[in-house]
Amino acid sequence: MTKEKALFEYLIRRADDSLILGHRLSEWCGHGPILEEDIALTNLALDLIGQATEWFQYAAEVEGEDRDEDDLAFMRIEREYKNVLLVEQTNGDFGKTIVRQFLFDHFQNLLFEKLLESEDEQIAAIAAKSIKEVRYHLKHSSEWVIRLGDGTEESHKRVQESLTDLSRFTEELFFQDEVDQILNKEGIICDTADFKDQYYKNIQAVIDEATLQLPEKQWQLDGGRKGVHSEHLGFLLTELQYMQRTYPNMKW
Image 1 (cartoon, rainbow, N blue to C red):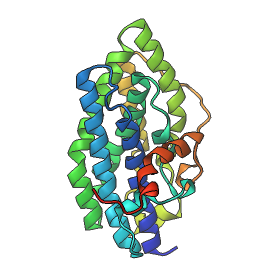
Image 2: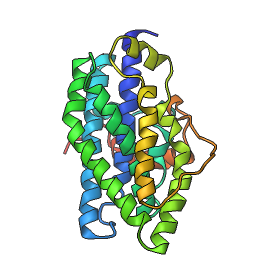
Image 3: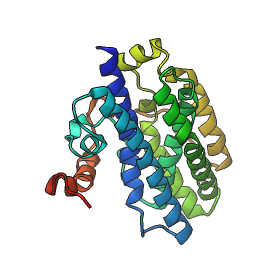
C-alpha cells in the first residue's frame, strides 16, 4: 500500500466517523427532551458535519480523482463507509444518545490532541480547528452521564443499560492496521495504543462519579473499519443520500 492510499483511507475513516455520528445527532432536531438540549444536540451535529467536510475535502485532494466532499459523503455504497460501529448505533432514548456520545468524545479528544503534532500540516490544522469543539462535546456528554447516572432510579437504570450495551463497541475505536502503521512511521498520525489506557481511565472516572459500572467482561464487536457494518447503517444511508441520489448534482 502506498503512502497516498493509506492517507486517503485514514482521512475517510475520520470523515465517516464524524459524518455518521453527526447525522445521528441531527435526528434529534425538534425532538430534544428540553429546548436547550434540542439546540445543543443540533449544534453538536453541525460541529461534526463541519469536521467531516474538512476531512472529506482533504481526502478528495489526496485521491485526485475529480471527486469532492459531496461525492464522498453521498455517493458511496455501504461497504465503502469506514466508520466505527459505535457511531451508527440508533439514538434510542436521550440517555443512550448521551452515552454513545460520551464514549466517542473521550476517544476523539485524546486523538485530536495527538493529531495537533502531526507532520502533515493539513491534518494538524484540522485538529487545531476542531479541538475546541471536541472539548465542549466531551464536557457536555460527561456532565450528562453524571447527571443521569446519579439521578433518579429510572434515569440510572436506562443509562446503565445503554452503557452496558454500547461499551461493546469501544475496542474498535483503537483498531489499527497497515494504514495506521504506514502513516505512523511517517509521523503523520499517532499510535492510538499510546493513549488507550488513558481513555479507559478517563471514562472510568466519570462512570464512577455517575455511580455506573462497566461490564467486567464483554464480547467486543468490530468490522466498521473494514466496511462491515450493523444493519443500522443501511437505513441511515437511505435517508442521508436520498436527495443527492434522487436529484444528482442539484443546486439550491
